[in-house]
Amino acid sequence: MQLTDFSGHIGIPVSNIATSETFYREVGFEVIERHSLDSGKGGNNHITFLAFGRTLVELYQLDQEPVAGQAGAIHHFAITVDDLKSIKSNLAEKGIPLTVPDTELPFGKDGVTYIMIEGPNGEMIEFDQFK
Image (cartoon, rainbow, N blue to C red; front, side, top):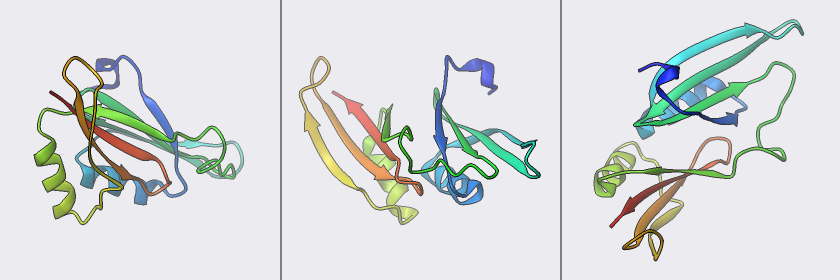
């Protein structure tokens, strides 16, 4: 898979690129690209692109610009899945707790069941299984 295979991405500022990448890989994301770019401030900006199916996430840690957890940071993003049970099993195996357990809403044609987890920077990841 390449970056050009996606229609866009979700950018999430992080305080520690290694910790965040490890978390997202444990959740089931696959690393697509990694970059370390000169920040022009004496250090490097670290960027990792990860995919979960057709959802692309960009994690970035900027040199001397702590933006994680500040206004404008992502609250949550959602991923549609076919098998919520297997997602929950994978999360349990990795010791990742559910922040929001199975919740049903009347969204979509026949409703949706979703769960949420919290990432290492306070971002929430929602997994949706539509009926």
